Amino acid sequence: MRVCSYLMADGTASYGVVDGEALVDAGKGLRARHRDLRAVLAAGALAELASADGERLGLSDVTLLPPVANPDKILCIGLNYMTHIRETGREAPTKPSIFTRYPSSLVGHAVDLVRPKASDWFDFEGELAVVIGKAGRAIPAARAYEHVAGYSCFNDGSIRDFQRHTTQFWAGKNFDRSGSMGPWLVTGEAFGDPAAGEMTTRLNGEVMQATPLSDLAFDVPALIEYISTVTELLPGDIIATGTPSGVGLFREPRLFMKPGDRVEVAITGIGILANRIVDEA
Image (cartoon, rainbow, N blue to C red; front, side, top):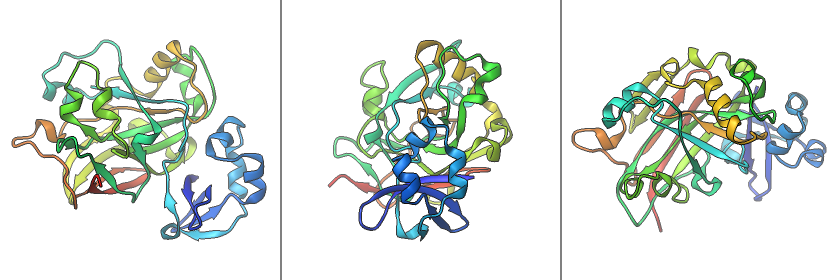
């Protein structure tokens, strides 16, 4: 099942199920019980969406939001593919490197990404995102998938010079509307084993990154085990699992996104997250 969050033409926020090229809205009854997708996950009610009976909408008739638009936490993993670790010149990590993003830094599929006035070092990072469906603390790796609701594509758009201002990545990762997630959440049973998939990032149709998801240094269960040792994972929380080699910063010459560009993150079993680049107004 593919589920997504969106704004209707009148600005009403809703969620529903993707059916081919259309959406079946959750409907007033389901929204009355669960106001948004995060509430659906918190109630353990994802299966209820299979019987959504709301209005049928075209994907082009709504503005897609990140699948979970209001997560409690967005946890991003840095340096989690050996190819990317080597291109940065760093040593292989023994523990995951984690930083946070804020919801205001993300937009949905087909919504413009914004290059800020403060910098033109706007880089792409294709990633697999994991969405938590069941709360848990100190989750053993062997039971990690019991806590996963599903998966989505993620673009960890990065303002590289700000990222390098200090040893902390935060500044380069949280400019408003600089990253994206979507186009929808694919439930865990529909997606299957994350290690079986492949991810490709394209800029203006040219492949920038291509990797099997099995190349993660810390796989999904390992990340969930480590993170949940520190903090309780809650329904709707997002883990962006890291990016492979090929980012613009380490190309010769450097290649950064500019207004008019189109960036795509494609993951087998999920689909394509695509965004156009615009300058900050």
